[in-house]
Picture 1 (tube, rainbow, N blue to C red):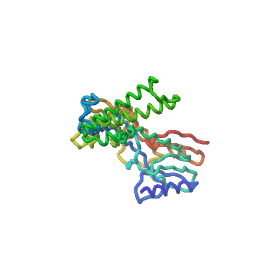
Picture 2 (picture 1 turned 90 degrees about the horizontal axis):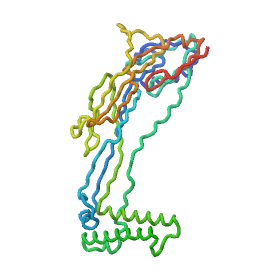
Picture 3 (picture 1 turned 135 degrees about the horizontal axis):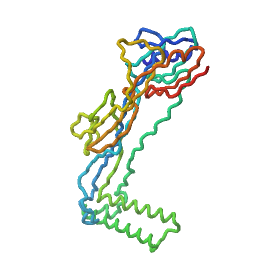
Length: 349
């Protein structure tokens, strides 16, 4: 199907003089340029933060030597929802497939299509779409291993308790050295501000790494999860995914998590569409007038998303009459490939 569409679109660009005759597309029946109008698919992007705690190897001595209370001895992983975002994207609508038949009578249009066969432009080129900026995901920096700063005396300690005692003394020595430097009382003071900054940063790094052997390390990392939903009608409290503080983002049917709900309400103005007993032949280029949907997403009573988005399924279709594309009028049209609506139209007379 896609290969046929691409081939026919190339044909349209290479043949300059044809008249158009638009009809509903029936596969393997007619030759011409096949184009689709899009329907709206909602892309739901969930950014969840994974927080992982790893206990230090000397955690049982944290309170004794560093007076650190409530230091956990077991690894833990916790999740939280950081952000939920929704994008309105267009996919080919199989119920809105049309064929532009070619006749060698009068001048007609050249049609530009997307790779999926959705109409983009007539008699002109569509502008290049700006690339979407990727989500900025938080990721923790590397945690330094405290063992690389252990002295020979610490490493040769005969027991874990003795190693903890000597490591704690090393931490206090580092703190004392920093205080002496900052007070200007050290025997070998740095010669300039840059050297002072470098020495303090290195001492901070060593202290942090050694302290993590008692208090453990906590890392935070964002992860992106994507879900899709097709809004054919109003949707009320539909479970799109589930979430667990221990397991993170889960599928909608995984009962290990609590539900995340989506509501989609049609807020388009009422436009009376004509009631047709038969599927009448189109009389020009068909395009969409998309409707609007109010989309809200909530979890545990908290609203994470609440915005209005274009939804073609909530709108109607209209027609650009064939007379706009006769040999006397050079009409140029640019469509929004996400919604099938007209974004620009002009002509030469």
